Each structure stands twice: as C-alpha cells, then as structure tokens.
Length: 353
Image 1: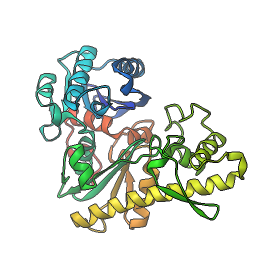
Image 2: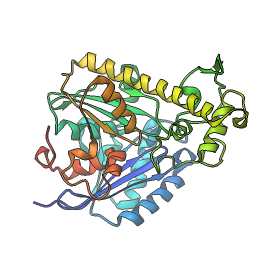
Image 3: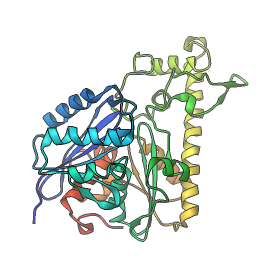
Image 4: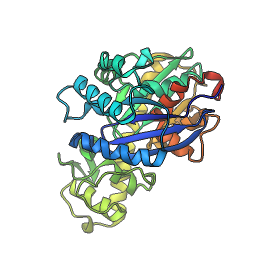
C-alpha cells in the first residue's frame, strides 16, 4: 500500500538537510541549505523557509537532529526541546515524528520527554538503512564537520556507544570533516621548505581550503563563508593556508601550497583510516563486508576502502529509486533515512547485499 508523501529533516548545527519521498518510496527531491544555528533559532526559521519553498507541503514529517549541540543552547536537552517546538510550530503535531534511536520514531510529546535519546541520533537512522541491506558492513559518513563510523553486525546496528561522549571515546565519532574543520585541528606541525613548522592556533584556513587546493572538494559542499570572508577560489585557499604558517601565498609558487594541502589531506585520511581499522578489528568484520559511504566527504571513504581492500558503495545505491540527484541522497543520508523509516517500507524495498 502506498505511504503518505514524507519529508525527512536533519536539523544540523551548520546545515539543514531535507528529503522528500513520494508515496511509493522514491526520492523526489533532496537539498542542503546553510543554517548557522549557533547564531540563534531565526537561522533555522530562514533555512526551513527555503526548504519548504523547494519541497512543498507533505502530510508526514520525520525529524532527526544534531543542532542541539550548538552553543546558543545552555544544555543539549534544552536544545532538543527548542528544535522540537520549532518543528511543531512549523508543520503541526499530527504528522510529525522525531527519531529517538532504539525507540524509533516518536511523537513530539514523547520526544520532549526523552530528549537525550533524540539528541544527535541521526547517524543511527542512516545505519538502520544499511543494516536493512547487509548482514555485516561498515557505514562511514564524512560530512563538513564530523565523521561517523558505525559497524553493522548480523543485520543490526552495532555501536559501542550511542551518545556523543561515548562515541568520541569509542572511536565511532571522529571530529574531522572536509569543509568546516580548522586546519589547526588536522596537524600540530607540517613539513615545509625543509623544516617542521608548527601550525598557528588560529582559524585562518579550514579543510575546505585543503581539499579545494587538492582539486577534490565537491561543488556546493562549502556553503558557509571562508575563514577570512574572502573568495572561495584556489588563490583564496592558498592565501588562507599560507597564513597558517606565517607566510603570504605570493612568496612561493602555487605548487608549494598544493603540496602542503596534499600532506594535510593525507594526514586527515590516515586518521580516518586508523579509526576504520580499529572498528574493523574490534568487530571482526569479514573481508567481504562492504564499506557504505555517505556525506559530502565520501570521496575520502572511497580512498579508505581502497586502502582496506574492501568493496565500497554509496548510500544512494541502497535505494531502488534514489531520484534525479543520487549524489545529494548520499550527501544527506540521515534526512533520507528518517523519511524511509517513517514510511516503514521494510528491507524488501531496498537493494539487499
């Protein structure tokens, strides 16, 4: 029986992601818009306006979030409550559900009473879709800010921890991404001009500059202003990266800054690879267990999977009808996942491995 058209929402601290699924489960539209939620709830309202204009109305809405972590909220529980209320005012109570991890999708009042289970559970929604497709797998979502690594064992999501504090300690949440991560968080010092040079503890440049100089930053991935508010070009990225070691970009050829960017990108890649190796060894995942890639940084997942000698596929590949923009489906996996879970389409609707 066809389900109601459903919009899945992922309310992040830096971006709002949304996906509209049609009555037969096909992805009709997916989008990501910048949302500087740390500046206050009006930022969310503006992002919701833009998303609703693009997606249109729907009778059912499923929500997951990480935005409760931003520092405009005094506590995570308060942040969850504010985001629940913002969505309730926006779309009403009747067709609105919130993802609460192992509890599944719950009503707004149930979510308000169990806020810490709702908090930052978006990774689990995506992993549930992977678990509906594979008995064993490693799901890796590299976004603009963080990397989520979730093992799937026996067709079940198999994390060691479920909140951010525990996931950081377990190695399942790695705070590195391909856009917003400050370069000073990628390494303490870098090899440059025959010396080991400390990086300045300033947000002069970000990972977006690194990957832009490497020629690998996906179009549309970098949606917030650059660290200096300047141009998002190779020249602009070189200028910002040069500042990290106290230099001007004009002092050396562009190839010098590209070489530094490649070294930093490799350092980030090795960190993610090490985290994957840890989880694989801990879980005893068989060599044929695939890596499922999501997020705007999934080009790094592909590179890691190749090093690990494992098959890799994108999150969008799991869906029978990912719609006209499968790359956005993989970019916005949690929003697509909660919409799919809301429609309760079951494993038979997916491409099982």
